[in-house]
Image (cartoon, rainbow, N blue to C red; front, side, top):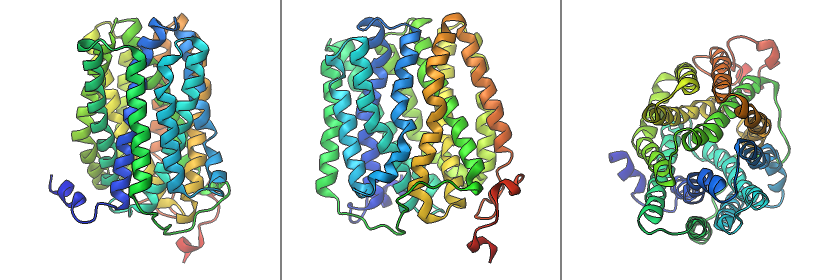
Length: 407
């Protein structure tokens, strides 16, 4: 609690507080969209697993195109682009409920996703530029906690809106999206323009010495789809969770994240990225294997909560990159890494959507295999990552050490 008081003392118009505010704005829209999606798609748009897989693949296309952020930086500063992306996220969410059809849901999802993915790309870049390496793991944990706290408020309001007030889908979508857009406007008016510490490249950056980071990012995107797309769908299709039930489950995840995410960040700071990633992937192998065979709704809900908690450990991939990166590469690499993260995300949901029709268990067992491959990759992360010390094995793939590390 003391660290939070220090954070909010003095002039509040600081970069770290802007990051926290924007992080809180995202779930107002995205948590609304996510909590309502499966029920809205099944009850109003008559989705099956195949349509859901296609929708999730379409949702990931803007993430796949995130490398284009570097070209937008020729026109806009990163900070201004973050505000614009937040506003687009809010708009896409706000209008979703007014288009209860397969095509309508596809289109509004793409609009929402453009804002969400471009904001997330910029947020990663700004965080790694504005926060020093020593404080990065804990601060990134606080950013997750701020988003989770906003999710708690959002999920609580959704539960009240549906189970007590009986509001229609379109009013809830409109409220969540409108609040995000309002916060984007406030941030634009209230916060100053913060200077760049290091001028970022305005072109694409692909470096051989980042190869392990690229692979870890790719596998992270692949495994994320199993959770986002099919774990929630399992809850509704197999176990019959209602909007209220799914929302309460999301609410529990958010409460746990508020408490645990900053602690996980501090733990990564003490353990180091290697140990944190190994722990994450060993746990995920067990979780995905259990998903494949679960037959009890309570146990499935418990697995969902544990699975979500592992997401905070993904901070370690970001701080690993921060430690090995040239500071001028951060913005361009954030866009490229988001594209790499979403290569699998564009393909897997649609492919696994059809596999789901044959065997839902096979989808989750494929997730176990992905986690096992990620575990092998994490064993190659050095104990003390730095420029010139990016990997334990495969230095030839990395090419010559950067000049700063060679001196």
